[in-house]
Amino acid sequence: MGETTPLHLDDPIETLPGIGPKRAGLLANLGIATVRELLFHLPRDYQDRRRIMRIADAVKHKGESVTIEAKVVRARSMRLRRGMSMTIVELRDSSGDIKATFFGRGSLFRTFEPGARGLFTGVIGEYKGPSLKSPDYEMLSGDAEDRLNTGRVVPIYRLTQKLTQRMLRKWVACALQRLDPASIDDPLPERLRLEHGFLPAAEALQAAHFPDEMADGRAARKRFAYEELLAIQLGILSERAA
Image 1: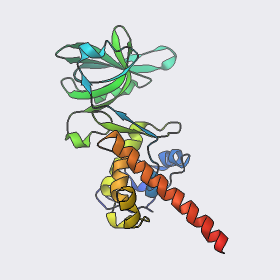
Image 2 (image 1 turned 30 degrees about the vertical axis):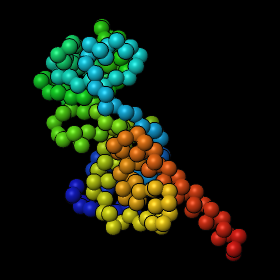
Image 3 (image 1 turned 90 degrees about the horizontal axis):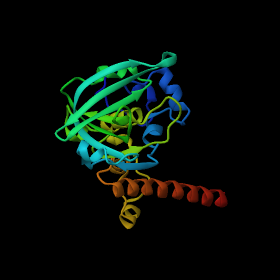
Image 4 (image 1 turned 45 degrees about the vertical axis):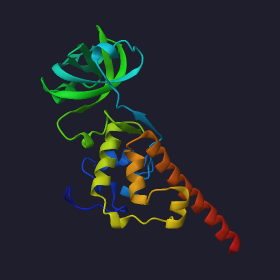
């Protein structure tokens, strides 16, 4: 199936690019086997990564999470003991330099071309000087709306072993982009939505995963929590009437 073919909620999760049998097995540990189950695996929280700091200011916030915009000066792989490796990326802006370190990911250095610019979000630490330890990053090659991991309000998902936030964000974004809107039934009547200020289901899914503001994401999750509670209550009433 081509990457532009519309998706439906009941399509198997392997329909999404980058998900083969192995990753499908990992997702199964989260109860995810279909596109529907992926999209209703809602974020447990959000982080606001829109405040971009100069490196000179960021290094003063040791132990805190910061976001910087910087140019790649050099990226290299280093061998460590016991066969481990790491990638070290030297970053620079007009105010100073900092390293980004990725332990256990020695081949990642190929991702960072000298001269390329990117957004990096991570905790300020020390590795032969100030460093960002295994930061989330987004290279600035596309439109701002395409940034999934930093420079915006980002979703934080419940994970299982060998799955990462980057993976989940990428797959969810792809599913939302390709989803056939006609496949989304809204179980909430319009009267109830208006009464509680809830978005329609399709818009709420987008807002739950990639909100413009923190409050938008929480409001969307509240809508789906209400929907779930209503379904439980209706089920109880149906059993009593039987």
